Image (tube, rainbow, N blue to C red):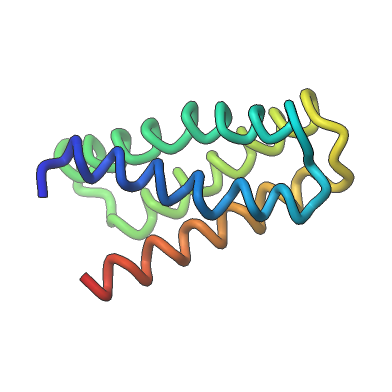
Length: 111
């Protein structure tokens, strides 16, 4: 599969998982738009940096993935804390990202 299509699919999967998680956390209306935009900011960047990291460094893939995913959780937490009224924005970010990461792993292993 071409990398560009994989990037789009990864973003769509992220949105399909994280928006409902955030909806369950109590976010509504414009707050869900914030979730969408935060994911548009973080997801392609994480995937592009992961690709560059594997191509340009000898760092272990799992280590790069862990650092980049942790950075996405922190970035989205800061956005949620600043732009939404959700209680426990770090926990929401962590759960949403864990859910979308897990779904991505599952789909990658199935296909």
